[in-house]
Length: 149
Image 1 (cartoon, rainbow, N blue to C red):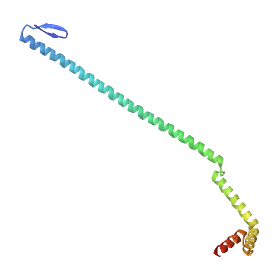
Image 2: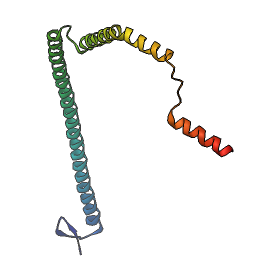
Image 3: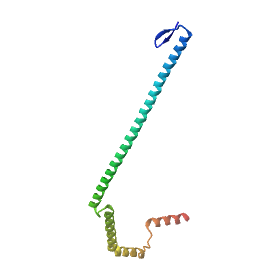
Image 4: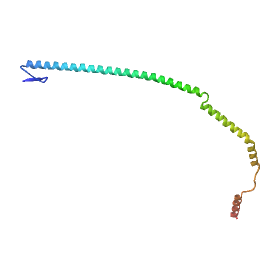
């Protein structure tokens, strides 16, 4: 009779050898468990270091992106200010004001030019009353009178 341990059969000669064998197996199991715990601890340390490195890289990337953004913004503001200086006072608003003033001036000139003619036309129309009835109205009245008879 024997106990299989690490692939080999160990013969048992007494109950003491069985106890010794169990102690040896338990000690070996403890050693393996300790190795596993140590390996797990190392793995956790490695993972934690990787997280810290990742966080540091992300922070560094953010800082670099912020620097690039500031430089880009400054460049775009510089271009905008240069373009604005080139445009000077000739902006769309000024152009619209000028066109509006020209249109108003043109309307006022047309009004002054046609004012007397329009006044005369209106007065003539009001004072010239035509007392003759249109032919269609005469026929309509004659039909109504004929219907009443």
